[in-house]
Image (cartoon, rainbow, N blue to C red; front, side, top):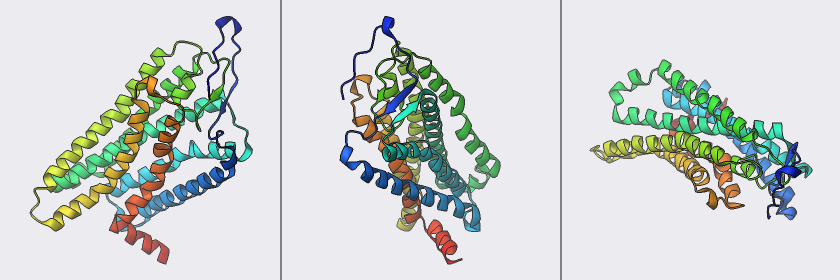
Length: 313
């Protein structure tokens, strides 16, 4: 869809709402998409909710790794709830308008939860690093107090930064063309509709992306490079396979989430093509939360055993 030319400053009409186009370019598939995303949303809620429940109830899962997994599952529920319900409402009613306040609120929560996920994934990687590379010191290093501090930091560090980022975007004047070619209020599609100079805003986005996406990603890579070097030195094939199995699921989630996020937010601005960002966003906002419990449960014997106990009650 071609963007209309923005009006001159003399003809500015302040916008009170946006229109989320979502998947409007697929008019014959609206109810199919509604059903598909509704099923995905239910799967995410039930699967992540189940993991959260069993990690809290089962005595065998009372360790730092499962404490972080419980927080991660709860976070995934919050993350998808910031985008999918609005998408379902738009698909079901075909009323795609969203007020500036609702758009700003959605953007803020999406970025707060996204930033928290980046930090929490790096914390989980550090947990695996200590467990595999320094097993004798693991109970001392990853004690309950440290775990609480790490999780609290992951949830709270990004709040003021994401609120500031959202405020900076919506402090810009919006006028004329009001159609957002996305299924949620993402920052680059919204910035395209601003009438003022957006250079500072885009630089702020890149800085925040480096801090919350690139830095955690590099820390995770550093942790896993250490893990791999230690595991390869283990004498037993069984020990090596067991060590790899404990972290391979986490690494798969990392690749899915960070890969799509880095491509979306750290590309040059002239490479943000219509439709491409929408597809990439599906990976880190919907597909990763759906795959997360499947990956963790199918590749983790303790989780499978806890799930069987829960179902047999």
